[in-house]
Image 1 (cartoon, helix red, strand yellow):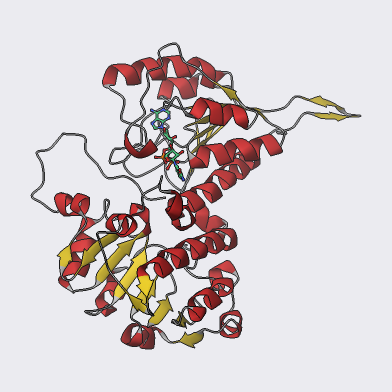
Image 2: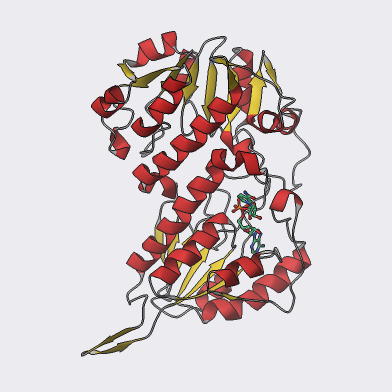
Length: 392
Ligand code: NAD
């Protein structure tokens, strides 16, 4: 079976789905590895490094003509999708809940679509395949570095001959994978760190990293299914925003990571809360999306400085800005998933398997993933607030 690694096509995407170090894992399992010319360039993996690891470097058209399985970080663009043919399998972060039409297109072409973002998160045997976690870790780390760069003071307490600098007070809102990594990174840089989340389980996790957990008096448990949060009701949201505002105003740096599956990212920092912050404060909105983010006024990929001197950094594809580390981790995830699905050198699709049931989106001409198939049914009436979960 020929497994091919493409050069990512999304603008600015620097990651690659498989790194040279992982190639032998696949070849030892009897798979042949093809790599599109220049696929690893953005993450500093040369064609010759892939060749030395046992892969063959191929031209784009040869790759699509001969590959059985195509590995990618994100998803095929229109040109790539056009080159795919019946019987091929594409594995990536296809965001089928954001773009169910792609799943339908692939199914229509009899291409099997496998999406790592559908992996069951809490299954311990699937942890090594969890690309949402590996990429969120990278993003949480980078968010802190961006915040530190945008902040006009030091993060740590510094005692020098020229005086003493107090440590920055940093708050992380939403302490899932990215938030906990942000807390750890900010602590290592010497900031005074607090964290807040709507899932009660996160209190212990925040405290175990040496940060202070902010307990709101209006707190309700918003633990939802599968370890995720549920959406707050309008009243709960208002109480949360009001109470959080006072905490936000006391911090120099705020990093927001809050997401709710299948919904818009919740608004945690209102315009009034931004106005109450001191000049020189920095916010990194990791929930920034075209649909709106966790912070009023954030724009994905842009830096906005408000009239009262608050810098709002709208995050956009942070993992791609740490391309080598992100690709290394993703490569381990995707190869673990692929090897899980291979028996006797061939891909064996079995949606009766708990892992495959989560990740196989299209197969044998059908969209087989129930949540994606549901989205492809006639549109619900407008205004029900249901939107897709942004990708990571
Ligand atoms: P996510 O990206 O869906 O959301 C980020 C965080 O935002 C979550 O902690 C969520 O509770 C929080 N949030 C949502 N609405 C909020 C609001 N209104 N105010 C404040 N915070 C809000 O989460 P994730 O990082 O993908 O993690 C989801 C869950 O999966 C977590 O419970 C995590 O521990 C769990 N997980 C488990 C494993 C495992 O067991 N192997 C692996 C990865 C993740």
